Amino acid sequence: MSYLTEDTSAEVVNGRIGAQTDPRLREVMSSLVSHLHAFIKEVELTEAEWDYAIEFLTRTGQMCDDTRQEFILLSDVLGVSMLVDAVNHRLPEGATQSTVFGPFHVKGAPERPMGATISLDGKGELCLFEGRVLDVDGTPIENALVDVWSDNEDGFYDVQQPDIQPPFNNRGVFRTGPDGRYAFRGIKPVSYPIPDDGPVGQMLAALGRHPWRPAHMHFMISAPEHARLITHLFVAGDDYLASDAVFGVKPDLIVGLEPVAEGDAMPPAEQGEAAPVKWRAQYDFRLKKQG
Image (tube, rainbow, N blue to C red; front, side, top):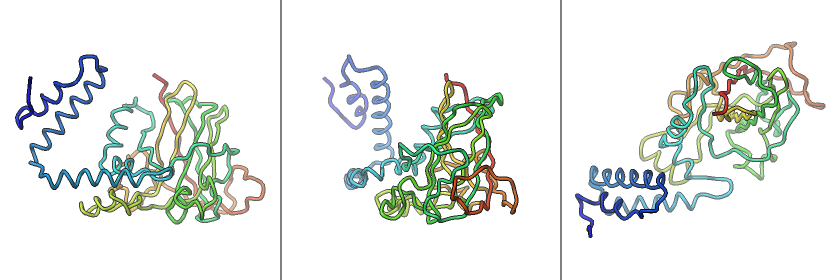
């Protein structure tokens, strides 16, 4: 029989794991316990600090609901989300880089005709996003679903303002044809702060960090026989590219927006859409084969 001491704490706790425990669960939990106990010993954590940590995590959970996930924010600002993404998406040369999913994706966004406008509140300068979905060898991918979403001109997603923004504002799904091309009208992205009125925001303030994300458009691209891609396109020149609060920026995902001159060719717009497009963002996504 082993009793817990300061020197033997991790070994004693891990020694209580049952013989029939799932091997992967045993591996993960044993490592977690070992690192957690080593951390406590290294910093000589006080009882008051541990009490505060428990209270912090409790408040983090209490901030979570159907439209806000404070634990995702915590994972994001600690760089954990991006590290898990990096470990799980080691991509072949030429494949488009992935980045964080974020807490504001909504299932069930409507599938729209190619070239349609996803901005429904009339705010912001329209930007044409266009390009192709390709295999890593450059072959166009037909029937790829391009799921896109962004904040509005005021820096809020529709789920953050359900009484202000129309449902599915700045959201849409597009399906590529044989040429692999996609095109839609969104708004010129704007930078915005992550929600900082909760425990995560208080932690950032205590650490002397800002809560801002650089301007970006979210993309989730799925295609038969290809690995799903979750990524952003970031706007070149944004003030927060080098200090993204969630560490999501990768150089290959930064694009310059080109001003659109009157008379420039545009894909067909939906009936009744009269607002002019002022910007253009062009980017080809390259997906790796499944497996």
